[in-house]
Length: 243
Image 1 (spheres, one colour):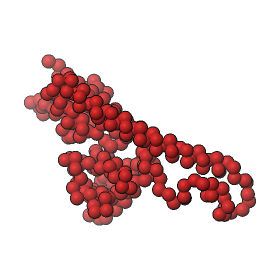
Image 2 (cartoon, rainbow, N blue to C red):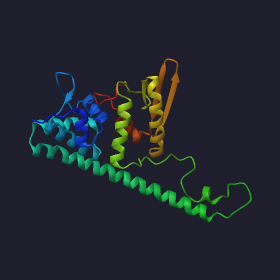
Image 3 (cartoon, helix red, strand yellow):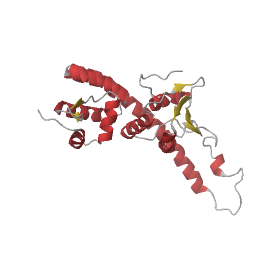
Image 4 (cartoon, rainbow, N blue to C red):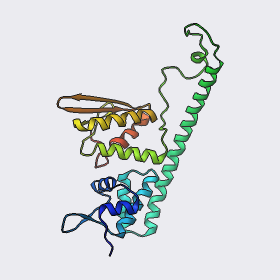
């Protein structure tokens, strides 16, 4: 039987070795060990990684994929099909919701652009008569639309980045619905980069990163109808955020 080291498996399936190690830490890709302590894989592991990659491309979270792998390993093909169909249907419904929200958001952007184009060139400060502010669009202080601008594949990749940098932390839900977790100093740069990316595609999310000499604390909040997105970002190993 052909055996692969982790670098060989990575080349075979087109997935970085670091990602394969992460899958192992999340319980998706158990590895045998050689007498010398090296990870060792076979053709069934090649199929397993391809299953994981395909499921991720459908936007499924890793915790859900781990459950599916149990069915894939022990059940029949029809069992996997019956489990996947409702999940894929749910992803379609979620994508349709995002498309509707983004279309509405685009409509507001187009209206704002048209009002700006119609403004006369005036050598004077803006005043309450500016058509951009009085053109019937949403109030200037209205909250941004609750719609993530990422497509499902990019969204899944973003979730993996969050879960990688938060591995080993203990996020918890606060009484106001926000989420808090303590992190080490060496994770702050990665967290800050993720926050910058996140607010570009999801401006309705709010993050506060507090750094002290003892460590750092990350607080995140969202409107009530978007708190499920925080659950996605901060999912604990049990799949439940403790209070």
